[in-house]
Image (cartoon, rainbow over all chains, first blue to last red; front, side):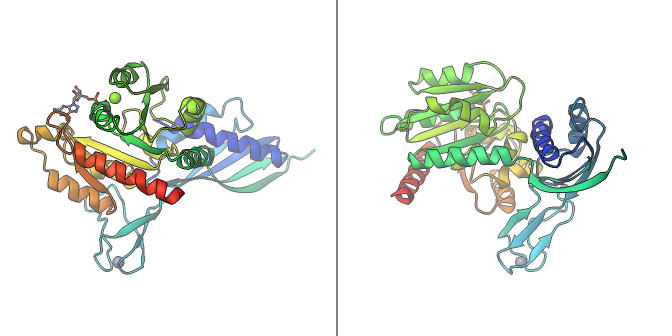
Length: 119
Length: 225
Ligand SMILES: Nc1nc2c(ncn2[C@@H]2O[C@H](COP(=O)(O)OP(=O)(O)O)[C@@H](O)[C@H]2O)c(=O)[nH]1
Ligand SMILES: [Mg+2]
Ligand SMILES: [Zn+2]
């Protein structure tokens, strides 16, 4: 359960951004959570809503967009947008050429994408 | 006055602050020629025991130090000190992983003339994988009693590691653990993994692992030269 420490870092960024933009209040927060980031969206939501109390974002809505895992194949060079990584028939091999030399290029990211603020 | 709403595009990495601290730790360690290894596994997979074995093997020729990450207690650091190595305990008081800033706080205590710095992370195969500590190498350990179906269940730990150690290999004859299968599954997730099998009881694989570490230390220092 490391969602709380991720949310704490998120609020450091939110508060800094809000200050720079001269916000009086943050009303919406949109984050991108990679499927392989290790963060559980439900736990992240719970942590967000408990942490926000008393901050500039204390009434903010949270939007979560899950970013899918993407691989690059070193066999044929193609980018592979995968299906559900937790499904039992998910394959790490390249669906185009069968190569097992695939490298993860996205899906581990955790980003604050945008804020909606009141000034 | 009417309140006006507007959107601010941010696109900032939420773990950016951890990554920044980790990069600066990595730079300092590598400049000093210290090879730092971050060990990830579930509680009880044998991280501390492996470090005791490796430490005893390496300490005649190298300077070795160990950072112990635990939720509570100094127990693991005391085990390491007992074999004559310096150890620094970080207690996270509830946090299930180490973060770069926790290392930064004790960084001044780490002697500049170390060869190897091992960092035993908090026992947990999930959360520590998300936090770069500034290590040069990451090890993921899986012990035979845990079962051979784990790599796919914990892909992030396997994707972010360079070395996979199957520990407690002395138990292979007693348990339905298919070491070939688990190796193949791990390599499917991360084809670049180096795989070792070790046993603290029989000593299997300890020499091979130490030779690998010495080779990596040499590579780091050749890069620096
Ligand atoms: N059979 C066997 N037991 C081991 C081995 N390595 C560690 N153990 C035992 O596993 C338990 C947990 O080991 P420990 O090193 O404390 O695990 P950690 O929590 O990952 O640091 C202890 O009781 C060890 O004696 C091994 O190679 N073989
Ligand atoms: Mg331990
Ligand atoms: Zn391909």
